[in-house]
Length: 66
Image (tube, rainbow, N blue to C red):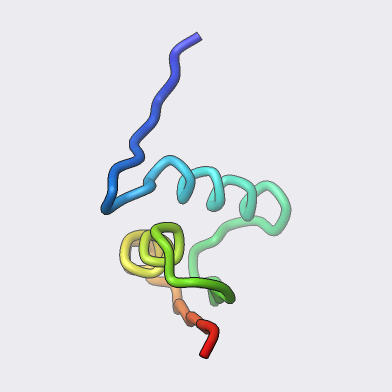
């Protein structure tokens, strides 16, 4: 069974792909969706905002603990 692990200190692309796939399985196309992240500023938050949202034209909002 092939395994892909794209995790680096700066990126976690495989997790973002899984997040997008899960969204689309449950809600339909993610294009044009408003995506919100609530939690700590970690790789997945940066990946969703910087990569996925910018590539698909989505709006991305992030809320971090004070």
